[in-house]
Length: 383
Image (cartoon, rainbow, N blue to C red; front, top):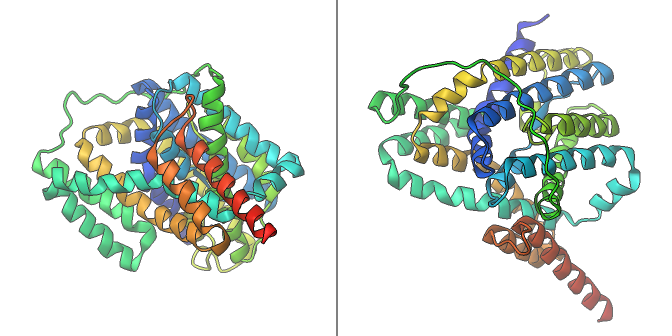
């Protein structure tokens, strides 16, 4: 056992948790989750990531590192008029669809037919409104958020993966030091899983479940597999899709949204700094799983500290955390010239947040982009 494997796993887990936990809490608030359901959500998704990472790493002898779907959490946080039970139904559907993608080849090919630019445009449309709220939050709480943003920008120059975690630490320190946050009536509840019976409402399944599946596949799983290939490993694509989909469907019954392959945090665990012998690096998945179990069990304490923070600070933290994913989504949306306009339409409709027939904007953005892309392709053939 090498200390470097433990440190890599610890850093990856802390970065994954600290950089987007605020977004997960926003998602829980958007679907009306109670305090108990929110705590169950966090514990269930931590345990799901631990189980999947350990299982796949041992089975494939490849350092498989899982993440929760950050774009998926943003998609959930952008919804309205959905109950927690209905959201759980969408989570279960998304997990089942991911598993089926690994089991049924035609379904995977169908998803692959969606142009990359349009998929990226949908993701950018989901993320953009959250990033735009950052400036307003800074105006509301400048003494804390401006230093937090400065730390984020400076740390990002040296280590982008640690930038959001550094910003969170700065925000916490300043908020408690200035009295903007305080812990009153301290009580630490035990971590518990709360079963939430799913409600399968057709418009929610179509408007949240299907887009959640698509953004998880396009912006998490595919880059995660690419990260493993870039490190010289052959990713276990079909087993990973089946395992993460099945685990997501089960953990969804306890409030958790989808887990998926990691990209940024995975890169922390794949280099020579972790272990000089690449055939031994798969063991980092076990340490990574252990740290996620610990983070899940410590969830009530962490959530208690975060709940004490001013709302504007949490909004700013989410905005900072999503700048990187937004950059990637915008780059992907406008890189392919043949789908550039269709991607713009997708982005605009998705970012509008307008729902029709009870179905969310992400679905209509995808439909609008595909319609424009199909129209342009048909016109090109007639020329």
